[in-house]
Image 1 (cartoon, helix red, strand yellow):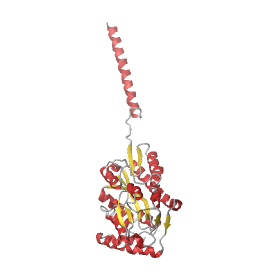
Image 2 (cartoon, rainbow, N blue to C red):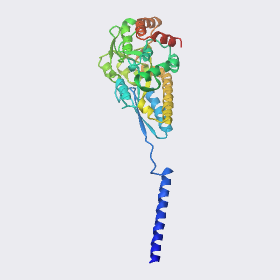
Image 3 (cartoon, rainbow, N blue to C red):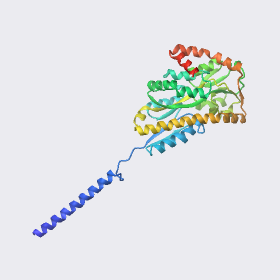
Amino acid sequence: MKKLTAGVLGLALSSSMLLAGCASSTSEGSAEGSDSAPKVETKTIKVANWYADDHGVNIALNEKFKTLVEKNSNGTLKVDIYSNSKLGGEEQMYDSVRAGTLEVAIISAIIEPEVPKVSTLSLPFLFRDLDHAQTVLKGEIGQEIAAQIEENTGVKLLGYGINGFRVFSSNKPLEKIEDFKGYRVRMPNVPQMIAVGQELGATVTPMPISEVFSALEQHVVDGQDNPYATLRANAWYEVQSHVLESNHIFLPHNIIMNKKFWDGLTPEQQKVVQDAMTESAAYEWQLYRDNEAKDKEFLKEKGLEIIVPDENFKNQMIDATKGIYDEFYKKNSFGEEIVNKIRNS
């Protein structure tokens, strides 16, 4: 009987040791990253804009931002790009970022009512050329505007891309200041930009960019104002005959991110996102510079006549819009100071 009991006890002890060994092995395997180890959550960054797929903005986003973020985040971040107003117009994209249903949007002067310093950038005939604009945005003034954007809207500004110098396309020649009379032009729904068209003598109709082609085709309006790249990418040359190279407004665009999403990223992920967008924006600027002459040549080949205003015509347009500066100074105590800083940059 004693022998039997001893045998049973020995077997039980051996089984306990075997089970203990198995438990120890499983625990070590988990600690060392076995299949049962917790997986890192992959977050998706949706980026929305109104530009066509082949516009420099989306080329830069795909070749730089998406590629760099997905590579350098080691798979913890994924980027989906929604071009061509797929997620709505500018106002809707802006509201979606603030509400947290969209992570990133590329918007322009739509935030002027909430961010007075942004309206500085849409003043007419303010910037001399691309170098001047880029210097201003990279410097103290660009930082001031960025700070006010973040403070007043609650979003994170990732950088300034480039919309560019705006020109007027039309279905009739605009060769002198008097030709603006009776010219029905689509412009963005931004009060100061609308005022530019009105002061030149045009009849301004605001509408979303997604509606412009049909409005031109159906002669609801005679023309629109946008940079050459946007004119080409949206194929408006199919329903326009002339371009006035007025360069009346230069606009960057503001690349904004939902602040809660930004705060939810790790410091390492934040650096990956910021570095990638900085490189993407720089690539945008380079593409704009490289392609402007090509865009103009393409439009000429499609039959558009490009009119470059002489000095007298240009000065007439500048004089016609001077009242916009007076109004800007009345509304904004910082107005005259910031304009002088820009002009002296």
